Length: 117
Image 1 (cartoon, rainbow, N blue to C red):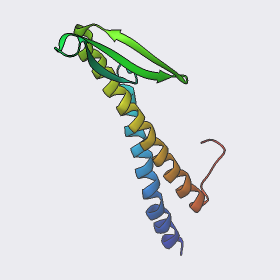
Image 2: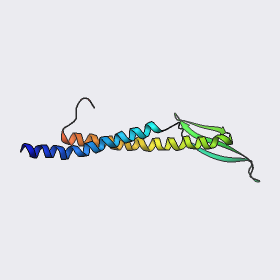
Image 3: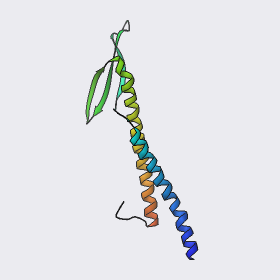
Image 4: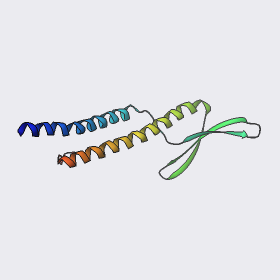
C-alpha cells in the first residue's frame, strides 16, 4: 500500500505543479511589460465638416475620475503601445487569479495548505 499511496500522491501533485508553473509564466510575462496606461485614443478635427486640422486626445478613468489629455501626433504610437500593455496587464492579472484559485482548490482538496503560502 505504501507504493500505491506514493503513486496517488505523485499523480495528484502533477496538477499542482502545472498550476504553479502557469503562475510562474504569468509572473514572468508581467515582468516583461513596459509602461502602461488605460484609455482610448481618438482623432478629432478642428473643422469636422471638411475633416481638416486633425488632433488626438486620450480619454481614461483613473481613481474614479475621468480625464482627457491632448496628444501630439508623434506620441500617438507610443501611447497606443502603452494602452496595449495595460490591456495585456489586465488579462494577465485575470489569468493569475484563475490559476491561483485553481491551485488553492487543489491544495484544499488534498489537504496540502500550509501557513506559508
